[in-house]
Length: 258
Length: 322
Image: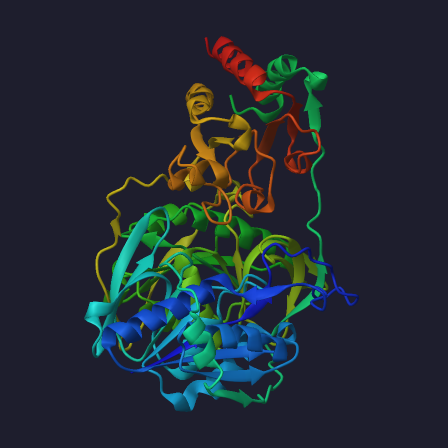
């Protein structure tokens, strides 16, 4: 059983973002970076599937600059067996299709049984790398997976998808298949000291992708702080009770929801 | 022309599709394009007659026996054929979980990609410039798409209002499609035993944050909600403290809502909360701190103690009711 996990390095959730001088992305030079949240859960699920099966290999695949080695090393320390690093300095310049194509070219010959990915990245949030990759690899996919029935693993795999408004649905997939994982699906393990030591001997294969122009690509023209579009009416002038009386009047006459 | 996707389960409409109709009509007006609706179904979908009451050129039932219960494989095959048969300029959808599942696949198969989860658009030289939220809502990005039509666009829930969809009369037609091998077997959708609250359909929401101070005080907010006929919701700290269940949580890790009225009590307005409610029609904030970021977003603000304001609000509302 071979499992591939896609992982991406993104800006730290709490990082203060500064817009780059070309106004097309942030300035990533001086901010802390981390593993994309849902990708961490994708790795955890991959490791649990391998453990349930009792054999197999978990291969991490990352597209990004050399700094993304941090993500890879962390994944290897947690238990991944080896890694493929598709080295690309500015992944933010690639469109979703180009990203998926570069990854497809890098992993196609691995012939994985299952490919795991996070459901979306916390930076560009295209939310389609996994789905497009599955199409390019010619394998079926499921998005927003919230549970994997590891006991069911054989020629097929049964997974639970999150629908909206508290609904869920189980699907049984022919393998190979690609699954995108929802955050919070399980408790992520820590890397043990033994794991960290062992990681140093694990293989990281570097690949330089051939990125071709893609006619249908979407391009980020400009990045900016969200605009404040609203004029706030302050009611009551510091008197909360008077404000409440005024508010009911506004709700009745201006908003007309009452 | 523009194709707009009508999402349904057993011929019952997913209401966000009405938002997609509004979006498609708006783009159609700006670019002088007609709009037709697409309903994948395994029968002469009962929903088609309802959708035909909107201002659309056609309602196309895309029919195959395998389109009864949703699967990404069946939907991708169906959409590929509809698009090839109709040559649309744009394909417009609401960014639902189902759309996220199949639309990127259809786009990729046709050598395109999807501009996803857009919050607005503008037109420039006959083309769309789409705005997406990136970095967990911290930044906006204006995006263009290259290449030839069709262009795939999905809009965030609440980006357009479903009740603004223009009414009219549309012709209903059925297009049979071929669906190939389905590589996944769906079971029946189900709800978890725990009752989940769907706040996305709420018209009025009263939400509480840290400023409510204790679990006992939730009752006061509940009383206001009851008076307004509103649903009660909360920011993350309240749910993390188990003062309200997690299915009441609004924000990046909870629900994304767009009610007509959102009353934020003691909520400072961290970005994680704002992404979940910024599209509300009218936002009211009650907060002691005049510098709280929630006031940047509010239409009406009361700077002061919510424990003074809320009882008066309840009293005044009752007066107007009677």
